[in-house]
Length: 402
Image (cartoon, rainbow, N blue to C red):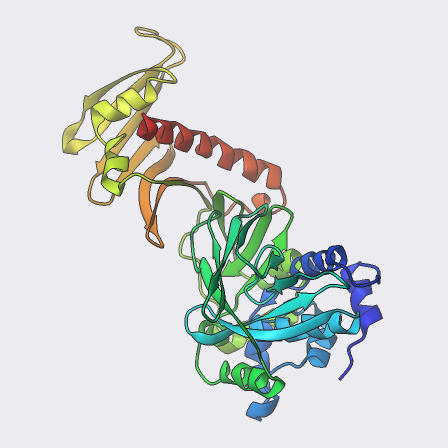
């Protein structure tokens, strides 16, 4: 069934043009920015449509919902909707299947644009941060470097940078998916109680960052940091403001699957830096009293004394013996958890070593006071706070490079 192309382009605020790579790139970016990856519409559809054959929101339903309520969808729905749009605009496009956690749990598109010879991996279902040439190579994006490598079935796609939480690697199969197979795999996503049928989640791209919601909190991810912002109830109006999806649809989905409280009541910023060092060696570079004092000595005169219970009291001053401009910290080391807890006045922060997807990361984490909803509207402030923490990680990494 055809989709209302003119209305869709107007909603996306993009003009009609001849098929080309640059036009495809613009459509891809605008779709990921304006059409949220969200599970609310799937939850409601699953509850309200009894016939398993009709549970998928075919492109005409998807786009009608988006134009009416700002809805988006999850993997298969987004892929089918974007395929319908760009095929109507003259692009040579074919759907394919793939793997995130298990075979055939994912879908994407392979697209040729105009007379250009390259075929492009156009993954609005994961979604990936950029179009990728369907051949071996790397693509640098604002959010991560993405690497494509051939596999016997197609291509492996891995994000080499960015916030290392959640899936970082997937496989795209080269074989075209026949319409009935695509629909069958899509219907199968309604047969199990996966997270997209049991909890409300949303995701949308913004310039230089990704905004997502789940388990009562909004997360703001950029190339090196994650900010977690707990939302007070009622959450649907805040989510409508941030993602553009009607609060009524979100409230209906919450009524069906529940609305979990956030795990913490205070906002938190975590900055990540990958290291090739062994986790224990990375922690040892700052994890003892002498090592931590030496670490701080690059910025101030530092001295420390042991405290009862194994803590250290650290004194920072412009120069030895100074009485003004002095800061004091209480430091607690947990060698087993590879973590330093730093208490400076009423503020607490952490240095940590973590392992994600078999890679080692230095982490600098700082809980803030209160939910800090202002950071949803003031991205420059969020960036400055993250940047301050990132400086500490650079200094830590320099010690490891000596």
